[in-house]
Length: 582
Image (tube, rainbow, N blue to C red; front, side):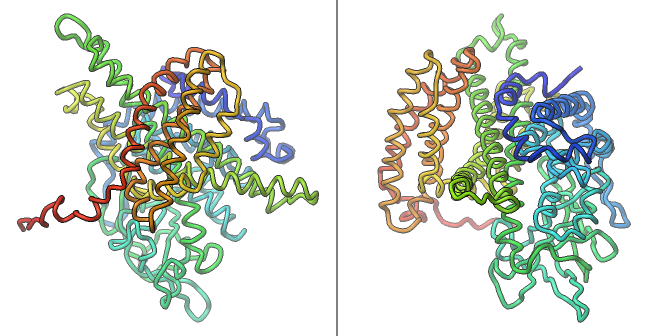
């Protein structure tokens, strides 16, 4: 029997070496909820045991039930009925029913709404496993951030109305943000929100590319202030489907066929305001998007893991010239590089989730249980500020790196399988189709780099590297740590050069190169740190440092070149705008 938790040694390693007791304390406080809710843990040890039990159960569900249905789900997909309703593919509907019965549709919601009250780290592991089984299903399972947003910002009345049904899996939701002319630029949202004389809010307009737009709970970004044309004029609303909400079409897509992507028409749809007016984009959607980006990183890990496993098995069994093709040096390099990228993305994503959880804990304490002691209050404020910087950099960084990894690893898996990989006889062509969207939705890779590079330039990466370098390492890995320490001034030099350039154009032009250099250093330290817990992981640290430090030097040369040809000679280099045939 397949279990996508127990069969993954790297997930088990990351889980076993995570600060589970600390994260449990953040989520459970004094553990007093155990007196009221029978499933709430009474101790940190009990919480950690709960985390493992749920992940083992979900791992079995993903391996034995969801994965075998994924090929048929991809082939059939959802259907838009004549009455405007949407029917999931049979495998999707069955999987959602099983996930609801397993009580895992409220991962991070408080116990009082029927949630598990688990930290983001555990939810991210869950997302990866579900995505390995069926990336399209994750697009419904992974929308639990909608419930988090309602819990964080809505009134108690709205929470009671929506959250129990979301936690139980009776209802699913949708983030209704994108419009035909407002994709990455959400400040351009035009869908109108207005009030009648009694104060009731209504929605009018069209939304496009809405994942699970047929869901029962719709979080809608709309323009409530018609005279304010930027993001300050937007508010967030919640509504339910009904006769005034029409699914006009289901998009025909390259991949994730099991996930319905809808175009929605709102016609005087009654709705409720979430939180305060004018904070829809600036506060609420930004929080929602950050959680979604971490979720897409987890989804990318699942796709990458699934792709690598097919390639690895095929290379070991497929013979050419009387020997397995994995014996050929070029194939070995390709497979090793794929696995290293996958392990690096997992380390980066899980470290991001831990940072997000620590930030959540500090912010929650500041809001609900602020210390009266001056020194304690200062320490708490320092922690909140520190992890706000770290999470602000790592969140877009992990989404960028993991989504690009899933594209590369799935593409390389096809290369390993050759012609067979291009055929539907193997799932790797589906994995590559599914991977492509991860670099686009919830913010393209280019936008993630723009967000991450600002954190790098402001010193967040250097701060994390400095803390990691001050840690304790196994003696066997110390020479590698010394080499990483010697490379840190290169990152500082690149940052200083970029900061010396006028404006932000040069930073955006070379942002990806700087972010890549920062990731190479961070992952190098994490891999070296891992050796103390598991000496066999020395091979990973050696491979990473030996291949990435030369790349950092190469990136340094490009960043310090001062070359602006991309901006200054674009027309000459890109050529004339082609005239496309009708």
